Length: 443
Image 1: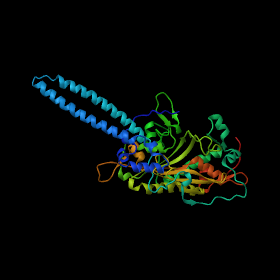
Image 2 (image 1 turned 180 degrees about the vertical axis):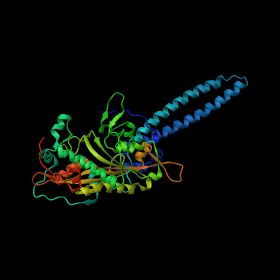
Image 3 (image 1 turned 90 degrees about the vertical axis):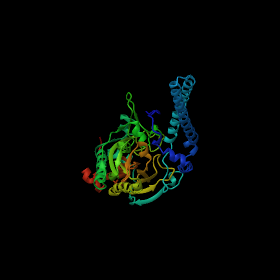
Image 4 (image 1 turned 45 degrees about the horizontal axis):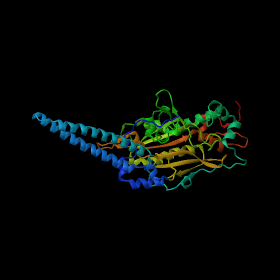
């Protein structure tokens, strides 16, 4: 399904090498805040970096010696003198230079490997913590519905209504896939259309429909490769270098890979609806019932490209746009600031939106909204030219689910269930659905 060999990356495509070198104690402190052992992440960074610089310096010294010897050879030949000793010296210097250059390349590859494995550093506003238990609730919206009956989980309701078919999905593909029938399928489509309409009409996002297959360069740019290859689905077809997208964040962010954006265009706000494919490696045994954790699910994604000085304001706006979907649907939720140890690899700061699920009596994540600062932009080489400056700078990238459609689907099923087993349609979705409620039907 995946391999460990990818293409070669430039050395400043991860965290900036000079920054890591000049701020090693800070990097180590931030890694500890993430719950990581700096020695395991940084490995022999200092030694490799030092050896690489020594090899480069030695190479330049040898090249200078070779140049002087070559000049001496030219003078000796011009005056008719014997230059055999100098010629032998230049041959020896050439061999030494080749050996040093080979060493430099090997050390640079090792340094690239180390730098590629260093996660983004948490922003100073991120709460310190050791696990999800240390995440901080920022705000809460809505009141969980009260029932005069025992509310059911979505997998029971979906089966009884004839709109969710997990058994036939196993027959078609295997576990962690789903088949939606009739109004179940229509609800999924209605939610996607509703979300896209809100984000484009009310929040100024531009809709884009990207490919669902991307190359390794794209996966690297947003931080999925090389560290998380086991969480991905790779397409093996001859020499094809393609992966199924785990989220629209990957193709949409990489639309501007190796490009320089005009400063006046920023912020650029894009939204996309795509299927998402995740192997969920290491999650087996978790959320095995229903559609909480699937290998394939659909999602509306929000992606922003921002000036660095504006990116945290843009994070708040992006998060609010995702929250507004929940509010319009009348779904109770809470907004959580993830602690330093619970954030994703590429994130500098993340808010999770957690929707209330009465059938399970829990809050479950329905969106993660993150600021990656320049981490992804550096890897994907996405720059902008500030007004009045000749030198380009890296943009800041942000993204968030606006929302995960399947989890919104199940949140509606559980929150709007009725005593007779039917499910009411939220007012905001009625124009998209054409019905007021979902009632039982068999297929």
